[in-house]
Image (cartoon, rainbow, N blue to C red; front, side):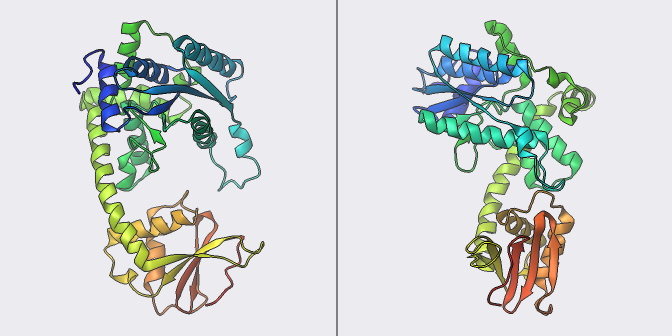
Length: 356
């Protein structure tokens, strides 16, 4: 099929629909009411007949902006009605998700909002019978994410940024190659109206300072195509990470197994990872550290992990002469205990007793 020859944003969406194999599918379009998601919705509507797309609209009301949150929901509902599209909304409370947890385990308000938002969007997608949820992450979001990770400290995988598709295919991001400037140009060209979130202008948030000050200054001083360059870096890193992930999967299957616990505070609850003796001491460092992270992720304790923790775990698992009962503490309440035939990783709250 020939590419779409209309506005640049719609042409980019058309390429993404082909690349992500979305033609003929049902998409729940996640619309906040802001510029990016509203433009994505309007662009997909232009493509719907050409690409045999079925579209529904989903909106998540976080309740964080008072009357403005209610106005956002009304605006998105009215737009969906004008376009003749089915509409669903879900209300979430990010503040509630932060209650009753320790400072270490407590998510930031933004993290809580994101987790609840994706959960709500998946619920709405199932309600509408949609194949995937389409979110409006764009090239600027990609560059901001990569730079924030770089400034805070990250490995090669962190430089992969935001993926075009979630691992399970439930979320797609067809605007990832389109800059915010190009989105604004589409809005101006079409006379599109949208809702503006006043918090986006606040310098209280690191991402806003990066967006409004640092990236423009870097682009002016070093590279006018900075966004594209970072986008290409992220894409390259993701492709490499996909290939490396296959090696990690294979090695993980040789080095540990998951064990369902039949012990602990509540009988039958909890799991542990059982590491067999041998193998870790001969691994290349790059592979060993990825495996260490994979193990911690599987046990739900990778939120505050640094390279130091990964190296510490690698060294601990590499010592076959370590005395039985020796223990290593890791972030997220994880513990690794030396047992008779290897090592056991478990989490505080589940008693690691069992055959050793």
